[in-house]
Image 1 (tube, rainbow, N blue to C red):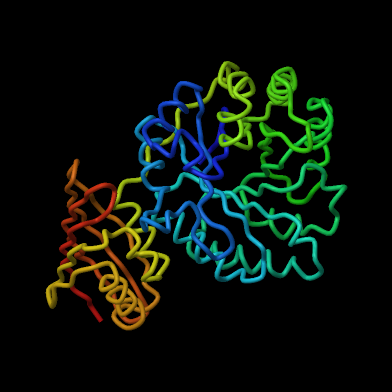
Image 2: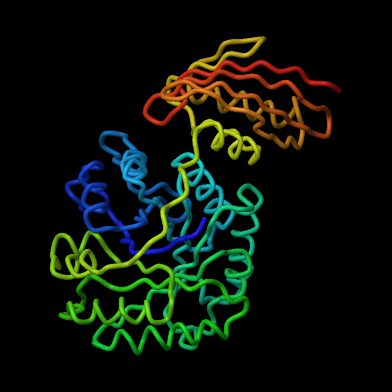
Length: 368
């Protein structure tokens, strides 16, 4: 998955266009954004979740963006105190939300001694489930200012470097972007560089429209493929001229690749061998039918998959071999192999509503 063009970070969905997914997508389209980055988790916890109404606010926004052919990336502030738990949350959100990419926001906590171990533990756990998923590191602008940060530990298993080039209390974005870009060419391993600029105010300072245009023009000069701004929340509400400057800037972006369909997402989830991740693709009251039983509810599906992974087919690897159907129905064929058997004739019918599986009939035979 490549990333080109202009994008914005969303911090709190309710603070963006009143939280209306369709309006968010329409505004992003009119600004000619190629991608939007939404906060999906904080540490080991879900983010942008309405606790009062018990509603995850992210899925509807992702769906609305995809309908406009705009990529949806998720960003996640991690602390490194529970790297395995944070990684499990990251995997679950990436799969269940049908994200196009994932952004690690790692900052001061990782400057403490020994945090290189936490960084590697986090990415090892994440890559165990999603070995090929696009991942970007979003951290400090100048690595020379933060030598304690475990740059190599993070960049070893990420695909992009997306530093926060925030020129706070100054108005020289071009010079700072050039310096940031140059410094990261000396960090091993070198990853494709995607810059993030500021559209917020702090301590009486805010970027100017001239700053934003200089930042964008410098990025183009350096042949940086994509830029982002933090954040939609500030810019649209309090710094509208900055939003307009980004929106009006011409940036040729390649069309995004097609969004993954439910059968592909199901195979990705099954290959994590984690019942929680697999069941996250199902509606709360989904019906799941096998040759031996009919179960209902997301929790029952989770228990079924955990039992399958732990006993029925150990260390299973799944492969989608065929898919037909459109709209709310899919028919798929698949195979799987494990240490205690193989499946050559997986044959399923799936019903879908609002991006979730509501009905799933599966038929297969295990050869020992």
